[in-house]
Image (tube, rainbow, N blue to C red; front, side, top):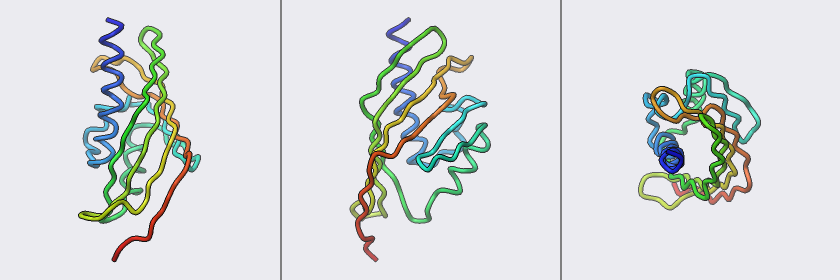
Amino acid sequence: MLADDRIEIADLHARLAVFLDEGRFEDAGRVYAGDVEVRNPQGATFRGIGTVVENLRRARVDGEHTQRRITDVLVDLAGDEASTSANSLVYAYREGQAPHRTSSMRMAFTVVRTPVGWRFRSVRMTLVWTRADPVAV
């Protein structure tokens, strides 16, 4: 069971990247626990799945897409809860163009087992660096 839990938790990180990149906000319950708490890189904290999704919708920029690479996932499992950490590289781009912004973040999570599987209960993102290039018009 321990190996299966670790695989499911690692998969949860990949699902988070797809959820965010594709803006699948209706699937928030597939990655977040209902009482999730998210601290963004700017230091703002959002509590509850509805508030988190509302903030994600507001933060989207028209015509801008993202592609995330979440790597180096470490899992410290303790029963029905786990602490995880990962690196995230986020490329922001416009359709058909090279990325105009690249950011690196260090992420820390609390993951909990729920009746429907593992979900993020807390997410903390720390910006490591950002590189911005001029956007082609």
